[in-house]
Amino acid sequence: MTRRTHTAPMAVALALLLGACAEGYPERSEVVTLHYGMGQAEAIKAMNQVVKGKQPKSPARFAMLEDCVLEVHARRPVDGRESRTLVLKGVRAVATRTADSDSYRVTLHRSGSPGDPGQTVMHGVPWTTATQIKWLLEYLPSTC
Image (cartoon, rainbow, N blue to C red):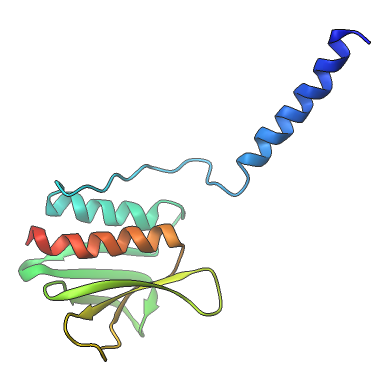
C-alpha cells in the first residue's frame, strides 16, 4: 500500500471528527465580556446582548430607570405581563433549573426575606444565559 492510500481515509475521518465537534454550537455568537469595571450603560448593553446572543429574536429587552429600577420588556409574558419594573436595591438574584426541562428561570428575591417567592426576570433560558443575567443583576446595583 502506498502512503497516498493511507492519507485519504485519515483525512476523511479527521473532517468528520471536526464537523462533529461543531454540532450543537451556534454558528456565530457575539462574545460578551462581563467585568467589574463596567458602567451602568455597558452592563445594560451586556444584558441585552446576552439574551439576544443565541436567538434570532431577543426574548427580553432591558433598560435602566432612575432609582436603580430595571425595566424589563419580555417578548413572552412573564407572570402574565410583558413589561414590568424591578427594584434592584436590596435583592439577590437566583438562577434555578426548571423541573421539566434543561431550561432555567432567573428570579429576584428580597434580601432577608426567606419566604419571598421572588419576581421572575426571565424563564426558559439556557444555563449560560441564566448565569450571566444573574451576575449582571447582582452587579447592576453597584452602578446606581
